Length: 449
Image (cartoon, rainbow, N blue to C red; front, side, top):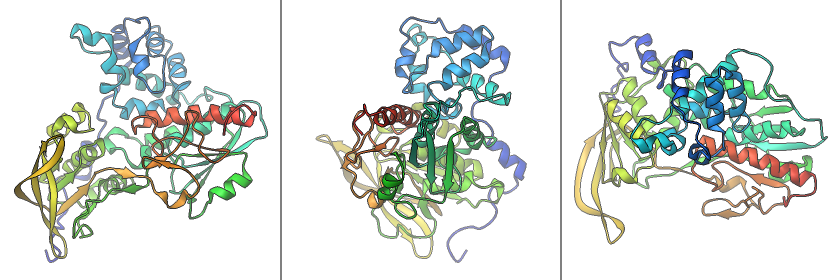
């Protein structure tokens, strides 16, 4: 092992089929019988708190009642009318801290209604029928809008603009659409190529063109888009990853967790992927959990997730943290990276124990070392400012008014690149939807823009 890593195949003794099975659906979909039973658990309460907890405002009691009365396609239309990417959100949305946490059933110490699984049941049923798209494109307004980024915000915006009769061209830097739905979510959350199937479904409304390999700043300039189109929507997400700020951070074996997840998602044969024998994941969010669990599934002997604060400060949900532990991941808290060891390849990391003193996180001076041959960094992402000249930046994100307009006339923004809520797919979808209505008002002369 001259470079410090064991290049023996991952998951020794496991077949490709075995490894693929490890990446099976995290949540098994409901059968029709189970869906009816789950729907019966909903009491269809007035002023339902679950609706208030949903960033996209889906009428949850109504769609559940529609499932209960065997109007499954109607339930799907109720969902998709507010959240056109309701299929992905049903799979990846943290319902345990949103709609299901708000469910009134929790007050009686009962299990909440399985809202996420019921939403998936309805949307999957409609998509499987391969019937006509449930929404129609509005009468052509003659207006043409440029959208930068084919992620959840951009696609949601494009679909709603199509419903309003506008034509859109979406510029996407990568070779596939979907954004983090395609490149950034764990494979076990998005099985059977669902992200692409959902995009294909969304595009059926018509009036939406996607141009690939065109990133903002390199192949596409904001000034030219403003000249050529009637309005612009920027939904570029957060393109840069945060650094540890340590020496030897560029050693082979040290990489961003988001790159590891992307590589895994874009590989047909997961058994061909190299994974470290002893993996360290640094971070406390859902990306860190996704990376750690998948490293374990690929056959790493040890996976250690290290976070600088206590568990209650982790942005990952309790469900996700428990999932990591059930998957064999060791979670080490109150530890901050101090140094990376190795010459031609990472061999170990040194950590310092931490505590909170006078409201600040400080090191205790006590250190320990973990042997590793693979380090995955998941300590957050930030906006890539290089291509955003002229746009106001506030708090590290694009400045946007309540109507999603920026300081540049005719330019709107939404999704993770602005501060509108949690950086979640469901919030990005809502941003895109509401921005579309704001753009429509602007084009009609009534909006700020």
